[in-house]
Length: 206
Length: 195
Image (tube, rainbow over all chains, first blue to last red; front, top):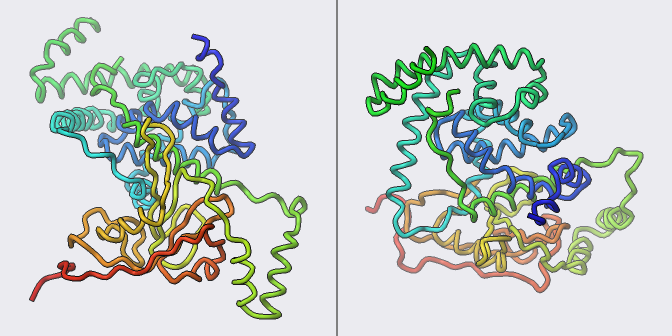
């Protein structure tokens, strides 16, 4: 689509923002807000906190702008900042409520019971995954979240985390194996409905 | 891969994105670092006002501010303060208001004074509170006298206080003037246990 071709790159928007154009940063937010929102949910496990963390991630990214060298995409940097923001979610929540608390609540919709129930289910499922994830080393957690869950390339993650590509590969390989075993065991006990999938996984590994 | 264990992705509601975007842009605009001292130009007008304040007292400053009443030009967001004191940074006592336009796009705040008054009326804003109160204990609250001021970036800021509050906090009054008298409670139950 021609419109897509004419869309400014992240690097261009970032340069405009740094030159004093707040709307360029706003465009970057609109472009990446949902990715960061879902990423934060996957690191915290609570949708409400993930929304707080999303805004705070953008704020912190802006504060650190002098240290960020945006290449093709701002996303790796956003995820890297989000890693720290989500770790400090409890500590930062009080300060950050000054942002989210100020924004008016979304308009009331006719009936959102299904949506609420689905979100509660999401959170339960995510908490199980996070319980397993948190048994890994912190550096391994970041690599799994950025590579496996968000689909960033090894080189993007390496650049954002400041480690060699080989380190990313080895961390990911180690973390995947351990996480899969933990999740398969956990889901066998708590989610019998997922047994078919876990058995498929075991078959993949064999 | 371990992505198959994750719940599905969800989207932020567009009005929420718009409101958060507006707040972030405000944050970015205010976070602009000051230029180094060797690049700063002296604000001659500001200096003159300082001299006048010393020489003739605050009345002159008030007159200066009145002379420089400023229309609201940035309608994306506005701020409702809960104290008659201006804090330009990100953390301030009060709340930011933003309203999504009909097309779900740019948020607009067309009448900050009325919107802030409605927040005071339902108790979401109360004198001195840091942010909006999510669940006020009473159904209605008195509204203090409110006054609308304009920041140097053209955004509306509403304070509780008399019409000269803008001068007192160092902001320009809105042009045309935006003031609203206090609104007392007649027979509406207030917070706290009844006897």
